[in-house]
Length: 76
Image (cartoon, rainbow, N blue to C red; front, side, top):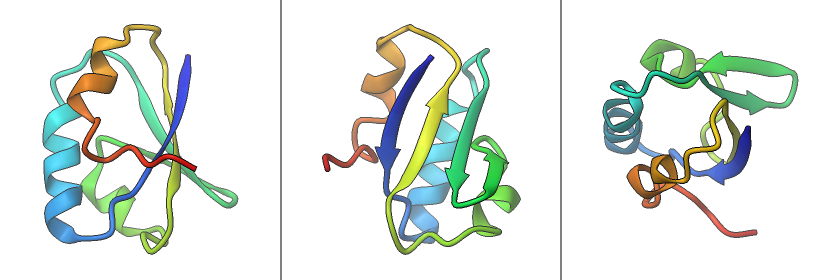
C-alpha cells in the first residue's frame, strides 16, 4: 500500500482525479479527519473538506499509478 497527500481544491480537479483513477483495478481511499471515502466516488469526495491536502491510500505497490495522479500530489 502507498500513501500520498493530494490536493483537490476545485471541481475540475476532482473530476480529473476521479477520471484518472477510475480504470485502475485497485482500491483508493481518501482520509480526512475521521472520514474515509472511496476516492473513485465524486459524491464521496464532495462530502469532505477539500480546502486542505488529503491523505490518499492506494491499495497497490504499482508506482505507475503515481504517474497518473502526479498533478494532484503535494509535497509537505
